[in-house]
Length: 267
Image (cartoon, rainbow, N blue to C red; front, top):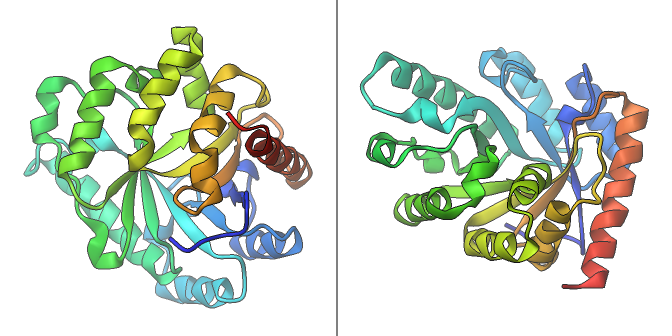
């Protein structure tokens, strides 16, 4: 990952409902957004089912716009359990189509969700395809707050240690949910610190309740300097009720100021 300007914050396209790709490119240029994360599954731009002509047009446009550096899939980590089953083959084919389409856009990572904690007995059956042939990293987003505790966290860290081509996407809203359960910044901070070396992307995530909670702060404290030196890529995710361009960009500007002030404040 190349070094970016200090405290650069990209934008995740989920924050604007119904925007077309060409308009997203124009928006990112007009607002000087440094890079984009694209919702790439069927509930987004559905890259796996786009025709080659459309993908080529978007790829050409992307060369003169802020880059698309990550694409999110609707696929889940648990979809890649038990190789050889029909469900596994479907998930594998979907990820392969998505990665093939995404590669044309010059993207370097694809995100999978981990909606639920993987049980200890299930780990032996999890087999994620390696996207290295596409020049990409597979990101795993820890969606369940229970991931940030004890055995689930240790199991995920061990899996990342033994499987190449994987990294984490940490979402501040999900961490804040974990904080509300734990009630302690100290214990959560220790848990996040254990994941720091595996983390490549952070989403500053505002679901309509702002960024004032303890979980948001501990993410900034843990990963802020890593984002500053280019080790972690930081983007804004807006999932509030009003997904208009105006509201999303207002929230984006606030999030950028919040992130930069968090860095200036230090630990």
